[in-house]
Length: 269
Image (cartoon, rainbow, N blue to C red; front, side, top):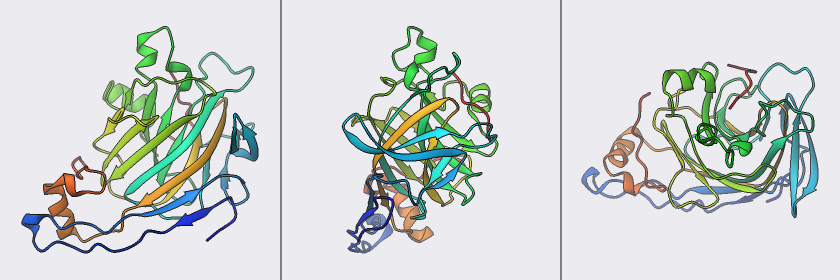
């Protein structure tokens, strides 16, 4: 089924059903996958960004740049689906715009569980110019988790140094594959098909919530996004969830739900 925005939905929603007892760990239904080629920007919900469909480095993509004099989050939301648990895959590239100040990093990432106005969400993003910097501290800041409102990179770095960011090899302006797996209050980031996560977040600050998925950029960034895929894990009862938490390997992504339950601020080094 095709929509605008270059959206193609692939449904594999065949219920598997539950096993017989908690001791055998009831299993969830099979995930549903939706693909968004991002060959058009027509249906994106833009907040503080300008978007256009382009050809970039061998791919059809959506190009995002920030609107001048905008004071707020710079995002482009997908109108659907509503996402709680599952995964988001995307090819993206980010680089500083020409003439950007020295603190620009080409900030580019994905937000999820967003409110319709883009003011509250979870987000994981990359700092492409940090990946090969000749400074180990900057390299350690190549990936970043934030949560809006209230938990920007600066607060998280001060309150828990090194916990919500990590190193990964990146290059500005180069296509990078990013995959985020989400389950309850936990998220894991995989980059360029890595077998192990490069960033693990065990206590997403908005708790268990749901909302839209979107494209995110920081200040002084030119970013490109292509071939986004969302896998939705169907919601299940609290009793079944407790069984999965006891046997995390039976979750579709092999992770349990362990973990505890400011707009417009520029990300930095």
